[in-house]
Image (cartoon, rainbow, N blue to C red):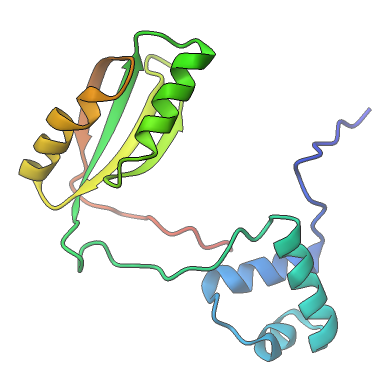
Length: 159
């Protein structure tokens, strides 16, 4: 018996071609997109709208270069909470989402509860963020920081 996840949309090969093309260039015209995936414009546009409506495509945005914006310091922070009951997790989640320096936050399995990707200008700014913001998040018991020396791959382009 195959278990079907209701959260997952049924995507065929043409849907995947559309998603791949958009992940490379979200500004592609519907004309160029339809040619790339082998459909006429109307069916291609219909599929695109369906993918948006179903939430497969969450939105479109500009990719920014954080280094050119002066945000080239990356730290990964493991966070262990003192309480992992639902209320504590919600309080932590709500608070961490309000910090613009936290680029990503993942609940993880293992010795720690969360892994954060924190982006700042430099180590001094990171130290301030750690001391004044991260350490004041609710239910934090322990943190461990790993400073990135070089970003080797950060793309989210489908291939």
